[in-house]
Length: 314
Image (cartoon, rainbow, N blue to C red; front, side, top):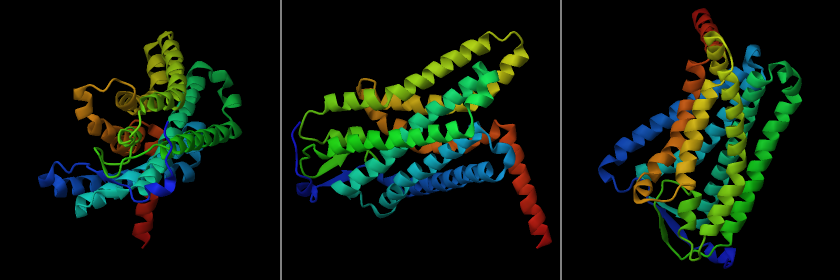
């Protein structure tokens, strides 16, 4: 791998093409993504508030859900404000350093989410497959360790990745056919052959948490299928259905984006799949968990009732 002096890259600029090929839709896209951003922020911050304030939600599953909402709030804010600015002003240029910073912050958050989803899968595995051991194993200390481990793994993985990427030689101004500084579109602009680097990084940092999540759900589904009564199966499945939906959407799009061969059709759909796990998944998270979860809906009704009582007093 060829090396390059960081100081020589200060003049390098990238152009985030984004949705610039749709000039007639720029205003419409601006208001669409602005609406998505507002709903995403309000929804996820509401989940965090409910988890913090309602005693009935002080359980491992909701502790993980609160951290997941925090992650999705942060990484949506890493992408959408910059994209909204580009749609509004038409300025799609971004410096090399700004691009690296955006990639680093987003990468840390998404990698942390991969490990956090694995921790949540393990939580569901214990709840369904080892219910008698759940209270002992999934204690508050262990939950904090799982979340802390997710963050540490996220920082280590992306710090190593960004360090390797900063050593790649980039050839002046380049067009990034994406709406943010993602890994694959950036390394395509390198003057060196980076396919091996992409494969190694994908294998090391994506497959382990995915494998753990997949293994947990294989055990969960096999356990549910062995339950005799239909009521018991439905009750067991309802405890993990929301998380399973999120995992399927999140990992499904990541696998399509980074691990499948890049056919012409997949290349054309890259931005669509990227929108799914970067913008639509954080948007859907509060709705999936709140609309399918009695405890969250009960806590939300309690907050709304208190707010209405306060307004009547005023």
